[in-house]
Amino acid sequence: MNISDAEVLRLIANSGLVVRFVLAVLLFFSMACWAIIVTKAVQFKRAQKENAAFVDYFWRTADLSKAFARAKQLPRSSVGRAFRAAYAELARITQAHPQEGGEAENGDSPAEAAPMPPMGFAPGRDNIERALRRSSENEVIHLSSWIPFLATTGNTAPFIGLFGTVWGIMDAFQEIGLRGSASLAVVAPGISEALVATAAGLAAAIPAVIAYNHFMTRIRFLESQMSSFSFEFINIVEREILPRQG
Image (cartoon, rainbow, N blue to C red; front, top):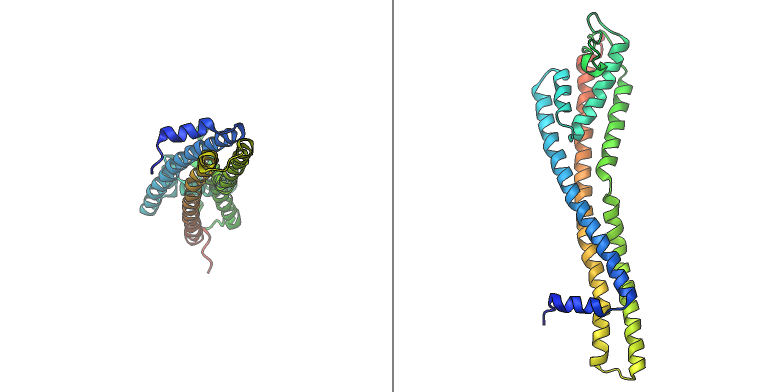
């Protein structure tokens, strides 16, 4: 026999104060989780789309300054932001060793006004690597924001619901003692009201766990993209910009 929405609402209305408080807490957890899920889904979708656009443009152009300008047009691209940090570091080093005509004009920032380093100039490879690594770490922190709340909900919501159920069953047995009867008609309503808390805990926890695992997979994928791009960019710097020995 199916339980209608009206019957569920009746069970909640007839439950004790503690059980209703537990249900209110679980409702808050559930609503917060769904807000995070929707927000993060949009964030990851945009990041993936802009990453693809930037990487495609980067490999189609041979001009790093144009790639920098393109990265600025894609603010949600984690790979683009990592490149901007590396290019800014490269430009900073270039400003410390300017070539003729390389001074910034009209108040342009070094990253926008600096020319590419001459072939005979060796920038600090370690500095560029650190800039890429620092930017990638910041991106992972940004992408991971609020996701631990999903894990917290997945781990704690079932136990919060179980607490409400245990408390409700205690009330049910107390009612049995007061009535002096243990018939099904006396026991069933109280237990049904108590089990609502467990159901609510599972309803909050299951989507949270699924979303947490999904988002962590997406983060690892984006982190892998940034790591691969960083490796390729360092290779380009070493091959095209660092001095050619011999």
